[in-house]
Image 1 (tube, helix red, strand yellow):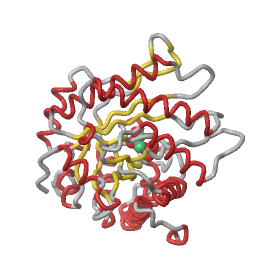
Image 2: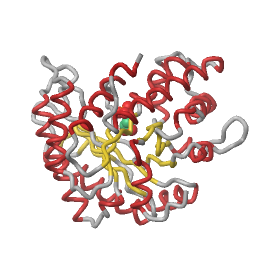
Image 3: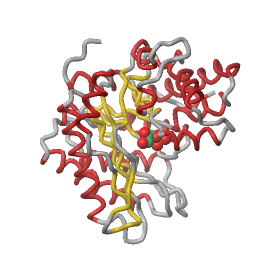
Length: 337
Ligand code: 13P
């Protein structure tokens, strides 16, 4: 894979319906996932789980990139092969989460701003040498009474733009991830309004900071009803409103949009993506960068046991293929049987 330019790297990741496996859970988040299956979150268990995922047959042709946490980028498989080499052998590019998590916003302490710009240039330079081809930074926007504030949106979106510039200077593709959380009772229209404001601010800051849009990927949340909303929008409405929001706010020369799943069920995440690609009418590739929606069935099958590895790999392979089909607008519920 002689991918020389940012544009080539970005295009490769989302080529032909391929998407991204987000496996960059920090150790505390991985601990929460492992708690749900009664497995202790040790360095070896995290390695075994991820090695199992990355060796799945269905990685090939369906997954163009894998986002890793610092520990995993440096880890070796049980037989001594660096996990990064297993990923590249599957035809996927390794990427790295570079943000340092959330801290309360001074002016509005119930909101957060993402940390990690200090020392980012040095960290990126090292990551690129280890083999990372792209990076990720997640900003979090909460919907609630009187929030998000303008300060929250502006500080987070400007940090994303500064991050993206530094990543590109280190020859990696930045994934910019503004996540509008599903938590809350808000309607899909409130989500539409907040997501539009957020994306509008993001692309203004990206331009202001001189970020090369053709060498960038966007990882947004979908426009969707709050988790505890009285009325939940169906698949057609989510697809229609998400596309409306993206078309109004995202430049057409961005190569790809890879959604996060954000707590949607695995089937919902696939159905929504498929519905958008069936509607069409946009220039970017519209694909996935799912964490939970790709991993959940595999995690529940694995349960920390070697003898379950093959079945768990089949579960991941199936979701990877289903989401590739959705990114091509060729998924159908009957394929899930
Ligand atoms: P989910 O798809 O589980 O939301 O994870 C994606 C991700 O990378 C969150 O930052």
